[in-house]
Length: 288
Image (cartoon, rainbow, N blue to C red; front, side, top):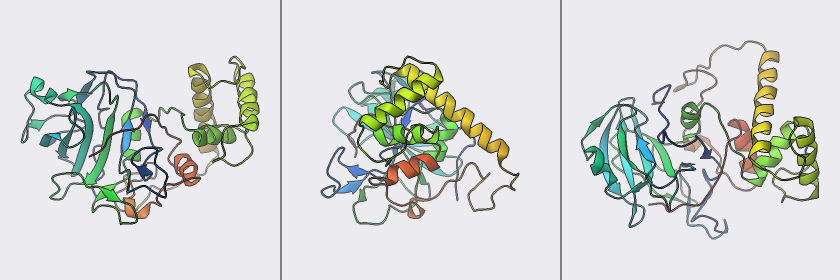
């Protein structure tokens, strides 16, 4: 199975690397009641992009199409990489690829300029597939199998960002506090007094202002503490041989197809997030 470049470029080099795992498998359209959702989310949102943010190619690739789908002003670029992946980069300003002479059939190198982010969208929606003869992305209809060749992009994006995370969803914050030993309770519960008490304890222990608010300094301190805790766990684990699973270069970088991943709803999000090294969420999106 195609796994992609071991060190792909972050698609938005001028943007601090953050992304949202929260919605992979979750309901579409954004924010809908899961009982009424028509389809699932098939990618990860690469967030925090301002208007005009530069978009680059993660790998050496052929441009399959530009200005596809999405909305009237926000479009997607499709790439087929030399490593055998089909990549979708959604949220690009319509026509912005012309600035860089990029069109269907253009050969691009890793880091090549592709277009610019639409400010009102504020991110790039990112999907990964086994390339095959694919020429476009596919909707993932609720109660239907995942589209053929759809890959969970989590591990690929982890390689881009170097495990830098942001914790925005309540379940993710609960999981982080629980991992550090401050929160006890259901991970998928609403934020409440127990959550605030756990956050205050963490802030005090980590040396940041104990105000019960999840600000940037608190998040940075918790992310650092999670990394330290993970490093300690790794040292205690016995050496293990590299994984021999198909499509896996090392045990760390597992890349399951969607068919092997449980659809993420409710409390399952916390478990998936924890298993994939605790990743993120922000805003909703328009999707083709």
